[in-house]
Length: 97
Image 1 (cartoon, rainbow, N blue to C red):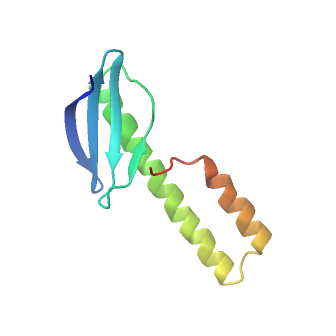
Image 2 (cartoon, helix red, strand yellow):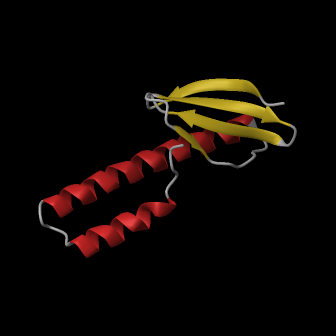
């Protein structure tokens, strides 16, 4: 059974580290309760916390870049095809659940 082992805040996000039989896993919640996970098991709670922080940083960077690309498209600095291609390249970013 997964029980919350450790909790912390990072850039306004809540990080919960849970202990499992095979290690530690992290789940991140934004202030508006969007959920991001890295879906990996880590050997220590410290590694799980670091991975969770990286997932938050990556998610926030991709969201900022997506907004910037949209602004560039709306101000006619990118064609629809350019915007679509660049925005689609962010498809592998961590998604909020």
